[in-house]
Length: 430
Image (cartoon, rainbow, N blue to C red):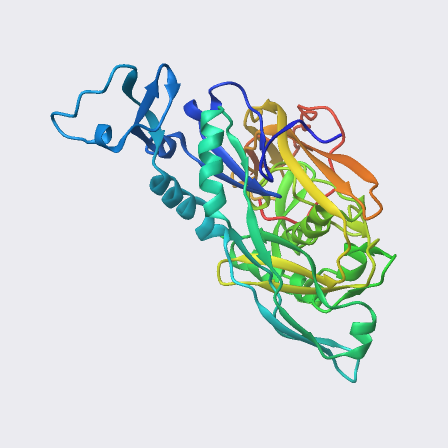
């Protein structure tokens, strides 16, 4: 069953404790996109307005009674004039435009898709869907939420298909005609080698076809990862350590690929989170780590057509997986993250090693708090079947971790401070 929602028109609000909206930040969401409006901004939305009653009931008074000034007219018996708190719609709109629209809105793209005589698929342009937060609807919904002490608001959006021309008859016969779903992520702030590896990884999937009814394996398509396939060394989680290895940053690519198919409602056959929460993959619980042969990202294409992937990155460091094909009538939604079991990083840790010159110190891990995060997905299939699944991610707390070089015997390492097996390595920049 879906969670209990307060419906206003076609927009839903997740209920929070009483007075949450007035006293705290407000959260706006669409899929995995989360936008926070601070309480300080919300306080700037308040204004005062005049309210009239007659015999205790709200009324619109005669125009002559609504005159302002130092000496307003005397109200007849039975009428009462008071002031009450109100909301400044223009101020709300400007805040939402700055906090949401400027980051979220985008125009629809244009793309021509073809297949060459040698069998390779080409893209002329980028087929991003257009999208726009509907502020005309969102402003009054925000006011309704504030009045009901609701602090979690679903963003009403308008989405438009890009202009798509498929010149290949073979691709048209496979059902390639529209955008089915898009996965996206932000890798701003990445160092040079990580950015390089992301670009190489994205290119590996551009033009890849996923047959209808097949299971897609990210690792199988990715192939070999080392210096011979164009990758550079960047930070990778390896057990308790985070250290350079070929392909560091490829989990940006796998997480981007995962988000689109997960949000659309395709069956996810395999996905695992990183061993600790990494800022590049916010919000928590929407990441997907890979490291051949396992862990992997796998999903079943149970849609009505093949899927064609176009990968793309823009000047704002957004990575995209655009899946073309034919949509069906399924409806889906994801809700989260629900967070619990927070824990602080363990005490700082230093171990001895003979791999460094005596006295030399090397950092092999940063502090990371621990937490559990869950997202619930609801899918209604074209035949009316309702499906629900919950994805739980368990992120370990990690200490600040150093190695220091020594000569001779090395002190035995202390056992891990938290139970459980160390997850397999993963390609990330920490």
